[in-house]
Image (cartoon, rainbow, N blue to C red; front, side):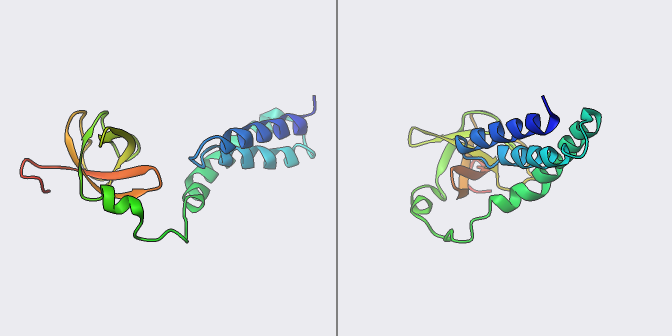
Length: 148
């Protein structure tokens, strides 16, 4: 099978996966595979195409993903703000700048540290919700007095 067809199939698969996930993560791989599909019309050498695919994927993850996640129409105040912002929640997993889960009102939410330089919050600790971005809550660790 031609290399351009292989990369085109990979691009379509990643695009279909992206349709079913809310993270704008797999679109980066789909774009990289589509570009490699176009480059494969010039060369069939996988030793050249695969490193290009990997390099493009990394570049797109680092630079395009933050741009894809911007929503210029998002208002600073939303209906979720009044219900969750400033409230206390409990970490149900360790919370880092890149991953974690909290529970509030018997609901399970994805969570991240609001300050990327802060120390990781351990499972079971109480946190304060500072803001949210779509389905991700940004939190900080609560001190014993309820403030940081």
